[in-house]
Image 1 (cartoon, rainbow, N blue to C red):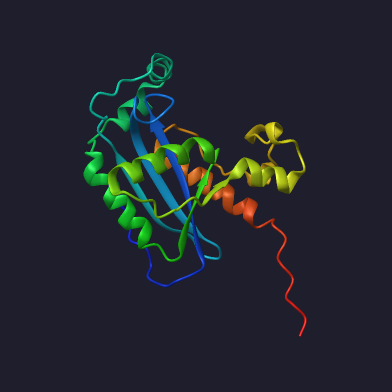
Image 2: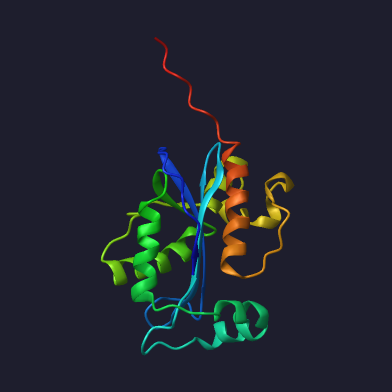
Length: 199
């Protein structure tokens, strides 16, 4: 597990780009293998990161479909199984990292519904709470608002090239969290700024 220290100065929100790797479709019967988050603050870029590989849950087993995916990606599988940590110790450290960020943490995912379901389950299971509360920002929904495309057309292949970082999608959690976070920050720059109230 590695965690880069966050600066202590405060801001309104820290956008926590997060990627998980798993051995099945849902937590509980299956396990989260890797968790990585990269925290971004507007105007400052990436301020901190956290990554850990996790031991599998007692009594859980890999899903055959997911295990076939891993068989086709042996390098990423090997990366996810390097130095795994017990979730009952690693997840509380992750929660502490989130609480130390310079601003309220906002989960950022692509899609948020997938990754957040795992992270929320693990946080509640192993700490009793989630520092995110229910604050999960979905990049596909943001893309829908920025482009006007139907939701199911809001995929990377339809995104403007200016949003896409020059990175390879490796299926290694930290690599993918950084790629996703850089893309999110480029999208964020195109949001309209609220006008100041007249005096």
